[in-house]
Structures are given as structure tokens and as C-alpha cells.
Length: 71
Image (cartoon, rainbow, N blue to C red; front, side, top):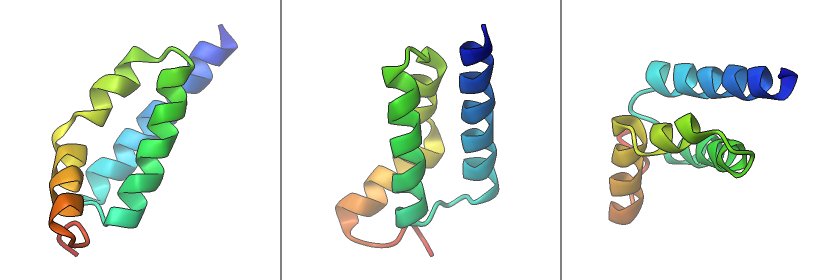
């Protein structure tokens, strides 16, 4: 049960950082996505949903265009 609570807390922290830092700088967004990838690998389905949230969707568009996520 403790692992589940830890994953939840980590996901909430990532979501909070993403919400406060919108639009995300490319480097920060990539780091947050790596954290979410780890949480998904541990079975956290809500982290997978967070990966496709608007903050990270904009990050993918910025990366494809070669800019720094609007900053």
C-alpha cells in the first residue's frame, strides 16, 4: 500500500509542477515525462493519462517545432 501512496504523491507533485510552469520549458518537460514513464512502468495508469494532458501535448508540439516550449 505504501508504494501506491508514494506513486500517487509523485504523480501529484509532477502535475503540480507542470501546472505551475505552463508552458513547460522543453528540458523541464522532458524530465517530468521521464518521471511519469517510470510511474507508468510501475503500474500507475493515472500517470499515463497525465502524459497526454494539455501541458505535455504542447511540449511535444514545441519539441517537434524545435523551440523551447514557449519560453
